[in-house]
Image (cartoon, rainbow, N blue to C red; front, side):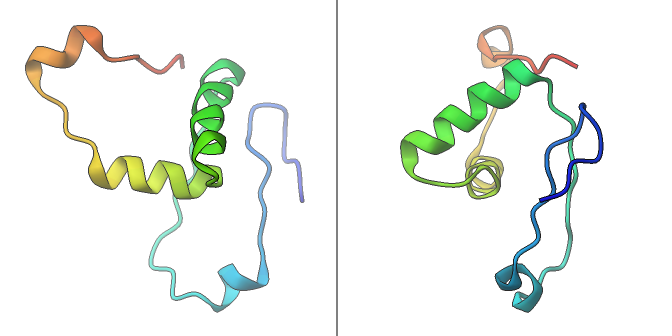
Amino acid sequence: MEKHNENCIDIVYTTDMAKSKTDFQVNTRWNEEDLAFVKAKADRMGWNLSQFIKAAALNAEFTIQMQEDLRKPKL
C-alpha cells in the first residue's frame, strides 16, 4: 500500500484489479471525519470502501425536498 500524502486515501492495487476489465477509475479526496463515517457504513455491511461507494452511487436517488436533510461532505 502506498501513501501519497496525508490528504489522500491509500492506493491499493491488487492482482484481482489488474485482471478485471475496468473502464474507469475515480479518485476522490475525503477529510478524516467523512471518510470514517462512510467507512463505518461499509464495514457494517462487510464491504470494502470501494464496493460501498459504488453501490451507493448506483442506487442513490435524491429529491429536492430532501436537500435540507442530506449530510453534506466537508471539503
